[in-house]
Length: 71
Image (cartoon, rainbow, N blue to C red; front, side, top):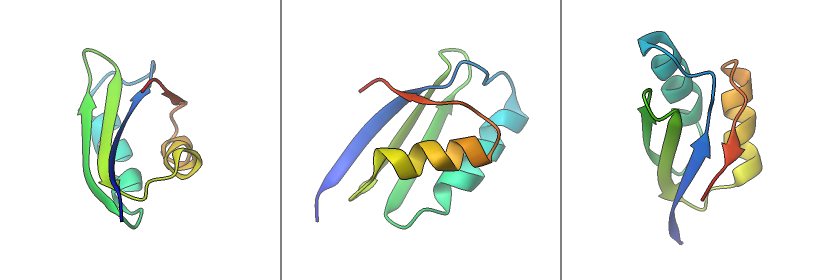
């Protein structure tokens, strides 16, 4: 298994509710170890094992936010 870290630009993140919604959806994905939402920078950092970009973006979309991989 391979640990990885990915960062996403999420331009519509603006409050604590946004943070909780994204953490809740992304946190459900098997292999995700941490989800950090930086409201000011509008960046979501996800760490875990065997992460799939498409799965993470789909989870953020489910929470109501458009995301784009930046790293």
